[in-house]
Amino acid sequence: MSGAFAVLRKELTIYFATPIFYIMGFFFLLVEGFLFFFVYFNYFQTASFQVAQNPQLAALLDPFQVVFRSFFEDLGFIFLLLTPILTMRLLAEEKRTGTAELLFTYPVPDWAVIMGKFLAAFSVVATFLLLTVVYPVMFAFLVKMDWGQVVSGYLGVFLLGGACLALGLFASSLTPNQIIAAVSAFALLLLFWLIGAPQEVGPGGDILSALSLREHLPNLAKGVIDTKDLLFYLCFAYFFLFLTKRQLESRRWRA
Amino acid sequence: MIAVQDLTKYYGLTPAISHLSFEVGKGEIVGFLGPNGAGKTTTLKILAGFLPPTSGKAQINGHDCVTDSLAVRRSLGYLPETAPLYTDLTTTQFLLFASRAKGVKRKEAQGEVDRVIKACDLGGVRHTLISSLSKGFRQRVGLAQALLNSPPLLILDEPTIGLDPAQIVEIRQLIKELSGDHTVILSSHILPEVSQLCQRVIIINKGQIVASDTPENLSRQLGQGSRLRVEVRGPVPEVTAALKGLPGVREVISQGEARYLVQAGNDLELRPEIARLVVSRGWDLLELQMQEFTLEEVFLNLVTEEES
Image (spheres, each protein chain N blue to C red):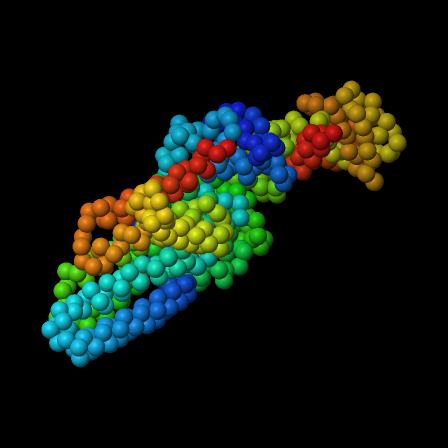
């Protein structure tokens, strides 16, 4: 356990000591700010239009559904681009610089190394997400907020973030090259994002769409917490962390 | 402490080491000697539990390096060949991480880090980023992390590489002080280092052990014969002839004025005979000394023999 904490602390120190955390944070917040402004502006326009047409309908217009639902869903897409950059270094760099030889000769079990690294990346994503809480808080000054829906939406993006990071960590365990790790993580995430699209095409589409990272977000984003969606993200993350562990172990038998 | 049996490791189809067997007792300092590519690093990596062997067994304190790797790693301080370090951290940050990863308790970690910083003379670069340290300092940071938590076994792969002469002396002194409580196994291709530091030398070449003994015994036994330095005041041709006449003497080389180098067969004690001879002829015996073969000669002998 202390091994996992040691690795977690080391990874966080490296995140904060290198520019990647600040650069990713800056651009993430920039894009988020723009998105929020955009969806909010859109809501404002629709609301004014409704008021002009039919005041009773305008009262029914749910600000959460219009603004935050798309806000959370767009966040999910940004994760596809963000998470591979955060995870690409984690294991690939250890292999490239040879520090793996230190790390894996310390008495730290493989799972502790993986959990330490995963939680470090997750803390970074969580920090970014917590910084976006200012938007719902700002919004709460203008309209009456349903905070339960906001919590549900954040739960969704946190889980999605964890799933993406687990996949990214696995990609990083496959190669000593950070670029290859990032590109393959991005390609795999994109695949799991789009895999639900053939739903309309024919039979079997349901199964594929059930595997899609995107299909499980809308429910949570609109405030419906369904165990099916929670379990999907948790299993997705667990599956890729498990693959990472197997990949690390393989160096012990691949003689 | 260390028991290695029939250890073999292939990289693809090329054997890096084949059928190595040796043992190292508690408190011993053992030197691994061999030319580049002899399999030193591979052997040490297997002992450290980083690489699996293709076949054979390596045990440390009765724990198998492959199946019981965690127990092995708990009793181990390992300095890899290139001293890889986390270059984005400062010396202290890195050593704190290493001490926690090696199981030092949170409260004791700072004290333990201070101890190894002092031992390796790193006080001046405590808060320097490792990326801006020179090779010598990096090597010492690498050594410092191996010493954390005082492991009973230290595996040091080329510990003095990249250091300046003064630092080399310091590090050798440090390693010497560690013996007794610690078992040390180190690799090197610097012969004087090994002969000064180690109680036992294992010479490997092309993945096989070609000799294993104390530096002194290696010089004597594997030097193929003994060598005597004799200084006698007397007529040179006669002295030469007389020395040559002794049983067992292979060659007498005259080295100027009164000096002679006498080469004889293995394990022959010629000194009394020479003394008697010189006295009986009425010459003056000024010096009579057994000369040992240097480890360099032994080493070159073994390694070139192997190649021919």
